[in-house]
Image 1 (cartoon, rainbow, N blue to C red):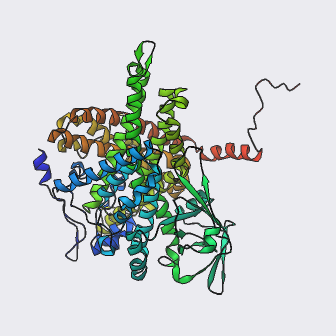
Image 2: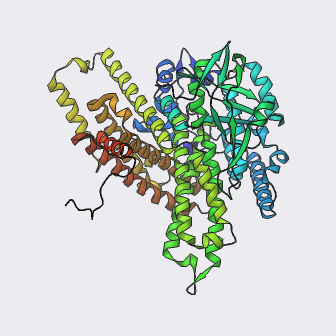
Image 3: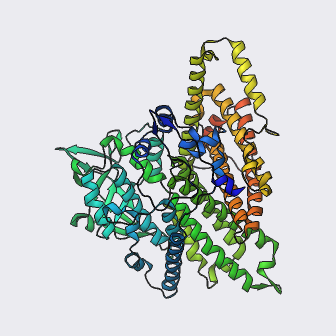
Length: 637
């Protein structure tokens, strides 16, 4: 069955006899850093523009957008992998050696970042054309998973990768030749800088409604004078990507290190025992020429948004960090005795370790699944998937803090495994990543917009063919008939399957596939209902963002784990049977959670809009400068 699946090719999409996206090969290709010209052009367009201009199915443009529309292709269940065994072996040897050296240097109390030059990690972020090492997405994820053992080292790699990828995508050829060659040689250590009020900035960029915020810039003799301070997440950077706001626009500048900047650069330690460093860079009164702008001035918002959301490698680093944490916790629980029994034999500890391991498994599956599809050019856009993975990685870290404390208790402070340092690093990683609210807003708004546009295209097509009349001009009876059909379609108990996805994986995963297909049907029906009744107003509703983001995450997690466990069990990987059982558990929990979120959202919009009430409660607390309800023992006489 597996061999039959691997021989299947996706239908290619043609327009003017030009192939737009690649056919499905048997396995992932080896390192390919640059896409074809056509795919490069598509990366600059929105999902709707790609579908309309190139006639590419929405599920081939973006996996999560396609799942929200209940669009599915059987090749989604072929988990991507390397075609060259030697490449896998050498990459695993590299990461194993890197992990070993990190552990050795940390045990000796040495500075881990000395490994940066020893392993020439900066070269993996730059294409071979500019002096680097061609690394595909899976290569980068594997390296970042190894760096997860040291979040400080990963932070430096992340900054270098973000700067390189942004310059590669938006920079002129002159900028690429100058900056990328120096990054590949290690001469330049870049850092991406954001204003203090980053969350507000990102919210405005997401909704394309940017307003002046008070930390603006001004033009003086065709030069930009900055009047803002920035947070730099990096180690001894000498080159900065900054995003000042000029009037109502954001512009990205490439700012080299200077003597003045060095004097005003101050290091801040977030927690006492944290390895991650933050530099406070004061750029007040700094003048910059227009010739150091990255891309076009109007690209600033897109660059800022991409720099904040392009964090699939963050998910891989969290996977590496979680594996280290799980190993340490397992060793501790097997060694410690409480009441003449090992700590590992307690049911509460087993439950906590189950949650930690399952979260890590799902995150790892999502990261490599999405990266492999992008390497094979089977999907064009990763924006929604990266936001989902980034958000899930944040939650994995948040839950890891609670679960670690539950397992260790007061021993967290005094045990020899330095769990206090691990907890500090987890908190720092959460502080320096995009907030969960931003990620929810971004992912949900993108999917809702694509859903509405795709459905509109479908209606326009039907109108053109004469099989469907323009619904906006019809009377109330037609509205009622349409809405009634939509409401009947929202069957949360037993949705009707369309794709029969269980036919394309190992038979033992049938129930997991049913859970996935039911969730896809429910989300499609509910989005159809909400957009029909409430229109674009739902795109600004925080309850919609949270619920839709949860379901998108469950969809991606279920597809990735089903494909991975089916592959592992079919080819006889070690513990493949465990992967199947873990997948069943996750898919069952994810389907139930999605059903609860969608049911709540369905009744939330059907009977009463509570979003205004939610905001009023928060507004009353803010107006009162604190909790404004009287104590229950207060007397009024």
